[in-house]
Image 1 (tube, rainbow, N blue to C red):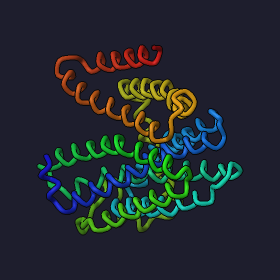
Image 2: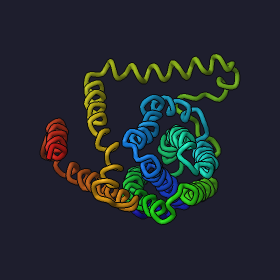
Image 3: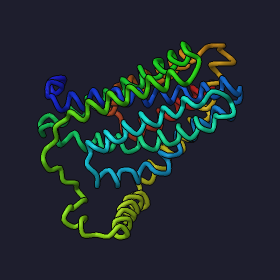
Length: 311
């Protein structure tokens, strides 16, 4: 599997992805903790988590429609450069009166990130051969899990060391710039046609027709949820699971600060251990799925999670 990393284009893309996603997790940790550090309010820190999640809820499916119409490599570069510039706005946050800037940056950064991941996923088949695609996708998943393990403690350590957002914002901004540089070095085929986009037709359509087409494609995707019972059931179940997990996520900052009397680095470690649990759970599920029905595994996982939270 690791042999695919010897391919120049994939190695550049994979490394850029790794750095970019670490930047995502750094921000996920530092912003809520900083808000709680300044305000002491559980509601205020929880609201920071909310503004970072809401863009995924409302615009996650729509982002994929646009990405399918754009050049994937330039979409990723644009996302990284935009986030690098956006994070510098945090340099203005020096008091509690300016925390609204941190909320705005968190929301916009999460929105921009929605375009990075689908662009990356769509670009991989264009730069690796068909026989290497499974290995490339596996490494893609591994990179995502690695960032969940190392991103939170890095963010916590930076905030704990400096005690302010400015140094964290600068370092995180540099990580996005480095990611953009690596992705710029990726060489893609001369033409990477989308499954939906037809360049000859797009060039002749008006802006209004373009937006109508985007709306129709997005609506068609949403209608799949209502038509397919299995997808609809999973959508509802996973939505409830995310809703149930939200209070824990919102309370993890005051829990770390007020109960454990710990700093942001410990918060990062707590999030890392959650990532380790998810990684081990993924391996265990892959093994058990050969012997146990998927629906039983899903139900057991939710039951054990509920028992764990109640204890």
